[in-house]
Amino acid sequence: MNKVEIYEPAMCCSTGVCGPGVDQELLRVATFLNELEGEGRLIIRYNLSSDPMAFVTNQEVNNIIANEGTEALPITVVDGEVRQKGSYPSNANFAEWAGMTREDIIKMVQKNDKPEIDKPASCGCGCDQSGCC
Image (cartoon, rainbow, N blue to C red; front, side):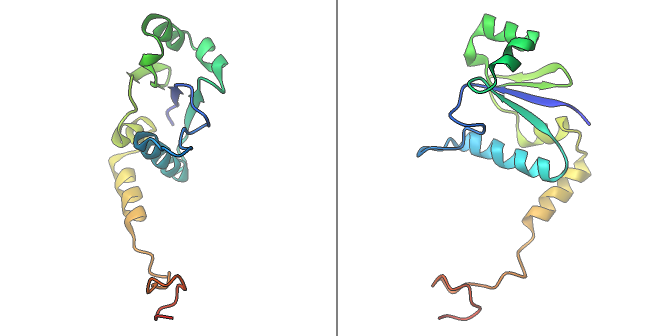
């Protein structure tokens, strides 16, 4: 399995998905990485504010920040090689870099698109009954 690491700018929490104004890009990333974890894949996220030593100990990341500033964040590293900087990878790139095959991705999407047939329909009143209250 590939080692995927994301070096992210300073954020208020580990995912950046908090507060009154949620960044939609961070929401996409957090959601998809959660799905990848559900498939047994691991992508390590380093937040500049909570894990600064990760930025110091990775010489290539350290050099990029020294030369380009924090505007180069996020930086995505796959098996020790910088693959992307300045923006988050697409979901397809995340999946590919995490070692998923096209078939794995299709199965994951199909699993997540299945309707919840066991859940009772709601009539909108909040009672979760199959008929109206």
